[in-house]
Length: 184
Ligand code: FES
Image (cartoon, rainbow, N blue to C red; front, side):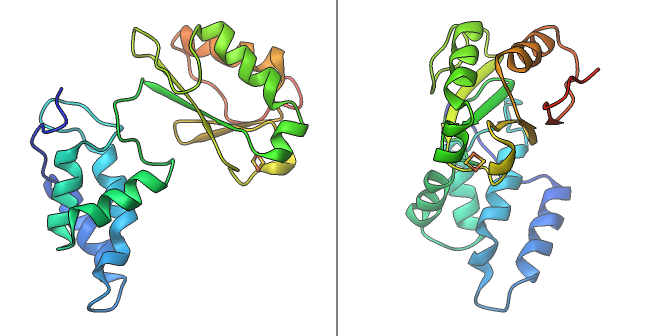
């Protein structure tokens, strides 16, 4: 896949994009930018790839909102919810902000790195896992917190983290939420 693989919204996403835009007053359509970038990131492109924003997607959104490409890029590159390069099937984001650090972030990070044999910022060779460190995920009281896809996994330790990794490796569904108590 190239970063220029053609992209346009399919009909359903055009309707959703127009709905998002209508939430803002005339002249403020650009306020819908993050919502439209999220839509674009989730939609497969012409090669069936999704989960990141190619140049083609960024240029399409800029054109859709009639704004400079560089402004769209500025927003897309600021927020860790947007990916500017391909990611693995499971995108793992570890919160590395102070409260999570005090609650055991490092041992959770080490577990991911050792079990997946990759470092932060890397993707496994089979494109199954991408590991990233992010700022506060807003669930500090239940640290250490990890986001995988759209779900949060909280109160993690070495044992629960290992269990989550093995479940994902087995291709089975994992239960999001707190892992303070053992889950079935
Ligand atoms: S510090 Fe980790 S969720 Fe806030």
